[in-house]
Amino acid sequence: MDINQLLRKNIQDLKPYSSARDEYTGEAMVFLDANENPFNQPYNRYPDPLQRALKEKIAVLKSVDPQQIFLGNGSDEPIDLLIRAFCEPGVDNIVTINPTYGMYQVAADISGVEIRKVSLTPEFQLDVDALLAATDENTKLIFLCSPNNPTGNSLDKKQILKVAERFKGLLIVDEAYIDFAPGKSLLPELEKFSNLVVLQTFSKAWGMAGIRLGMAFASKEITGILNKIKYPYNLNILTQQKALELLGQYEQVKEWVKLLIEERGKVAQELKKLPFVVEVYPSDANFLLVKMHDARGVYDYLVEEGIIVRDRSKVHLCTDSLRITIGVNEENNILLNTLNNLI
Ligand SMILES: *Cc1c(COP(=O)(O)O)cnc(C)c1O
Image (tube, rainbow, N blue to C red):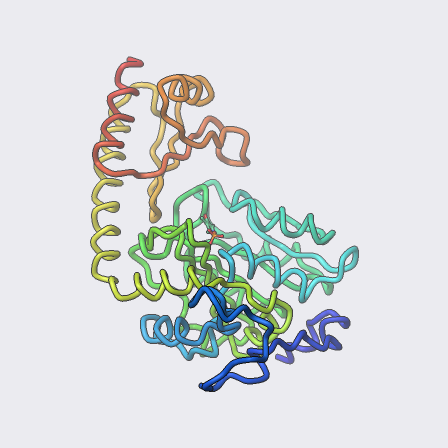
């Protein structure tokens, strides 16, 4: 696949901004190249635009080459950059599933790019033929999400790979919740599929939503395009330092994930006992999608009691469903006790 064929013309021709830190990256005694203030170290210095130290560590953890990593201000950044790099407003389109994460639509809308949504099956699985039937010669990107938000289930891996095989554009698979899933990441498939992009994030399992750090894994041609069009210093020093610190505490992260998966099982069991709960869908994520009688009424009651969940009742295939994030044991018990008072 020639990735440049897929790119918008203006991005192919773009001469990117060259920062002082791009032109000289070595160690020096005196840095007088970037009009920085010499006082207030270390925050006076611009951060590494390519976040090399951080990528080295992530590469080891994920068994990929550092050049296959793009780091952004949350996953939101690579989602937006992919659309802006590949989709000509008013001409090209992207295809995704319904229901799924809302950010693909928002990013497409902001860019003036058409988004086509293909319903999942009633079991929340992919219909590969329907998905591909929605594409045409102007479809540049397909966005999938596995485990999917808000349904919580993983999409069948064989089906995802069928899409990668048959689709001529880029397939982006958002794995924000992969650490909570029993199935493996698609990262090893990057070797086979040059049109695959895998998104992961520090916002969920890593417990760092506040520092805004998202990862896109892809061929170095694709990460090169994202690097070319991103803000030169898209990740600040504080984010890079904090992430480096937490990468050294991976055992702690694994412990959090284990606890949350245990809690997820317990909360699901208890919810199923409530007479107004119709179904607790199987989840591979750190939340549960729960179908119940009068979900909106339950939502309003919980808000009055100071408990906030996400009302997904108006979402396709999620009629009368709430999305409930798994908290620590005490928080989950408060939720369950409050719901029990409704009986
Ligand atoms: C939470 C979530 C993200 C994370 O986005 P960030 O910008 O990295 O915080 C990405 N994708 C999905 C599907 C999510 O639910």
